[in-house]
Length: 497
Image 1 (cartoon, rainbow, N blue to C red):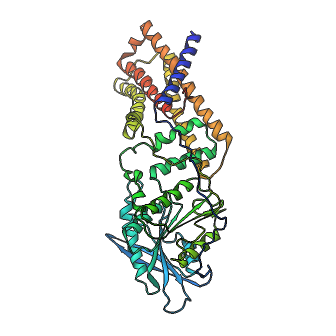
Image 2: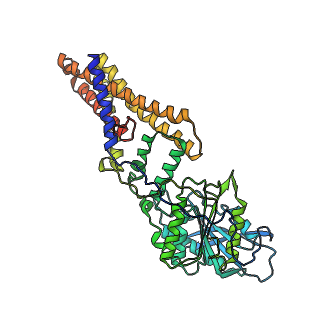
Image 3: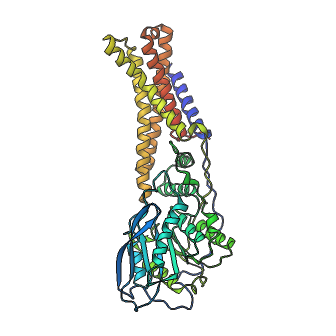
């Protein structure tokens, strides 16, 4: 009897592992072939034009209001306070990434630029039309263009020399502004994703997880999570393609990445921008890579000073610096895998269906106890389940739920490590083995509990439990099986293929 249970348990675990392997989609990112050629390790901007250095001028700032279509935002403008009277300076409008939104963002860089003679404007991000679920990048570009107009109207700004600076998510917005408005004189793309948000999210997740040292089986989660539709709808911007706009950009363009930025395709991104500009007949590009710098062009929490100096030099030297050699300079970037389109999960594991399946499983497990308690309240009595079967069923329901709780806690802890560029083999490897052990143990309990049900049915005890007992037995086993199948889909059981 024990031998048959062991064999049945092994068969169930292997079957669940097979489900996880073939349920799809799989994950096999394409190795990136070739790399971008860095011409010089020196990030300084070439060209014959002499420009003022960062720190040349005293800096003053003021808060202004920008009227948008249906809203008003504040903006901070930093400018050189002791410049020659009547002098007109180039200007730049900063476009926020996903992690910033207030006009105090970019303050260090804005004031560094102002100290070199660039009028820098940081508007608040408009939030009444911006949410996690819904984002309209062309509409956001139109909002930022209102700030461009405010800056161009200032008496200390040369209206023909005002550009935009997009960082991170702003890299999807700034090219739209440049492509749709002749008032934008230049484009700065810092830590730009270039590929669609969904592709970037999959690329970043893969990079973070590999850097953290997770088991390879866990990487299968990437397309199953990132490629899925979000329950409840929305997130249409996940597949936004900025390339059609970049192919209309004719302005001088500066591209900047940090070589330690694991979230962005640092080689592929720069190459794509260069190719898109070429489609517009635009050869005025400059690319700079900063050694050891992260997504915010920071090393050890501090903005790289050479970045601010280079940025000021490039802006102040335009148009002479637009195509000056070296075009590509700095540290050599390394990108192992390409950011490519992400496969979509099949219908049974996509969006609302996945949530509905989990809710149904939890409801099936809970319905029996709820009916039993109800019958006790109404009749003051209820037929109990046979005690060995009741204990095994309780262990089964608890094991299935605990497996999911442990899996969620494990993912949360791994995400913390990954986002902070940390490794912890005890948590990463030991935690994964613990989750898998819980899953395997629950599968074994399922087999034993099922055997108890069959035994009770043969002896006639099952029929004596009444309809409430039968519903409880069916609900716990069906609900637990659905949870085990869902856990298998998310890779909890060792893959067979």
